[in-house]
Length: 407
Image 1 (cartoon, one colour):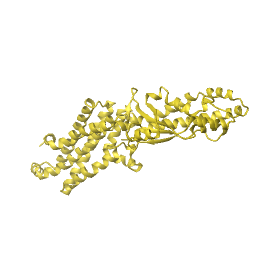
Image 2 (image 1 turned 180 degrees about the vertical axis):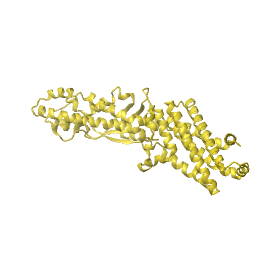
Image 3 (image 1 turned 30 degrees about the vertical axis):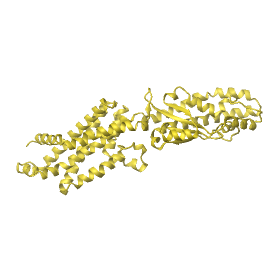
Image 4 (image 1 turned 90 degrees about the horizontal axis):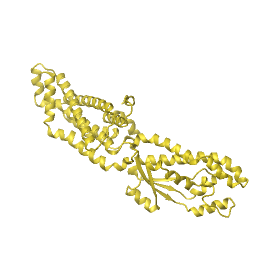
């Protein structure tokens, strides 16, 4: 019997095995559909520009009138309006940032009370609750005396949505950093003007620093730094993650093959015909590789047509299918040989019921690797499905192949 005939026989055996086909084809289709739909909130709704949308609640924990009165008293003035020295008004600067047209392309907000904010977080209606604390306004004016640069801004985040909330924290942190930088520059000039009582001239100083432009330049940099981790949606991520996980079950099917051949007396019959065990091992390797390739192709076609998944760069995707199928076949061959030597299915069982789940966990098939403890993230290189997932994601981002060489 030629090797070609052995491979054809092995492939047919799998195609006739309805139970195995259900495990490697039907189950991943169902899972990627359910997870993609149910976890859309974790990855965020996309805007027209392709950047995920975030909706936040803003809580004002201060009283504007009281704080402006405190500022006036500190400056020995009878009254003081928020429009006076507006460039130092933290509330005005903060909401100018949120109301900016570019920011609103991916971030919307609404004012909430503390009770409303907590309820919205629990219901998943907002990504985060941003709290502008007491003395937020007062402290921003007191930078003139060198007391502090800007009030702290606090956050409350829904733990189930913390992956996507990072983009919100990045935006707010950029605001704080840029405001600190601007205030440091302004203080040198305004100190002398304030001491001479020339308050009117300070407004010109504020305009000269072009506060909003400097703030937005910092925000733009922050968006670019975080966009790569956030831009794909839940259907894209879980289509690749679940597909890579169920490739491991294909390796498990290959791991049982030689043992089954022994039980079916195929190995002794081939030996009589002058065919060694090595030919069966190679046939099993090719069979698993073909099966993994077909499995990957079906999953990609299904997710593209039914779920609308954009897989990105075709060359990267084709190369990933080839390499992952080769790696899965190698694992299947290894398990098959060890199972045959042990003369027991326990080796294959341990792989399917323990190793697969461990690889799926550290490889990011359940939740993105970024959400795992650091020690588990470092184990990702041991996961074949995790490496394939990273290559597929690189393809979705249409990154150059050089970025996937290490995987």
